[in-house]
Length: 253
Image (cartoon, rainbow, N blue to C red; front, side, top):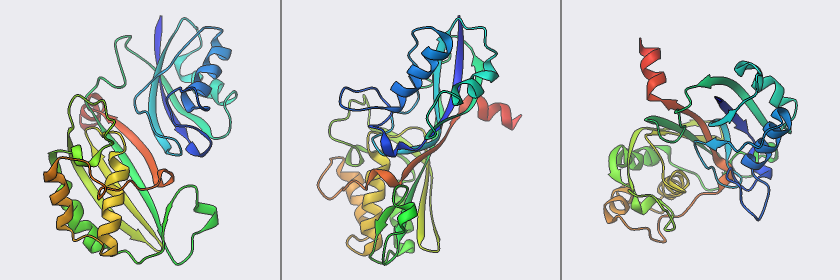
């Protein structure tokens, strides 16, 4: 038995998220079917990040176990022939049978894209959240600074979370404006359910002047989800990559 690791990219527009569920088609379901058809085995992948409906990814990670003799690096090519155009296997490789994508020390990198213009851009409507009000990026950066480091992010997650702990560490939170697009780039050791979208929603309100930057600190210290911590739309969010500690150490050497 071999364990194969996949880097998976997808456009989440037409999917009800990553994880298999009864009310709609998901990325995990489509991937399972493609692997089963390729190998002739009953296989269920294990994903690193269970992205929501409408959320995109450039570098989600999944593994599956197989008896197939297909070379590990060839799985990406073979699966891409069987997957729809909105799901792509970026790479495939063999890993240890004990390697688990969720039980490793890692850093996850997300981006949240905002179209800040008078009217939305039709060709980007599925990949940006539209805000017509002028956003002050400097105010957003000031508010974002309160989130850096290790904190209890209970105020920035869905109240239905099953997480054992709501403490997370944010290593980096950059906000850049390129023309009519504002991009939030956030890197942390893990994220709670809806956490990045809630951070984006609060910072958008800070940028509009609806909240002062200090409101971020107030919400954080309150450690309780309130109506003031709104959730930004899903389509602006993209999981860029997952960096595993073992890989970071190898690259450093």
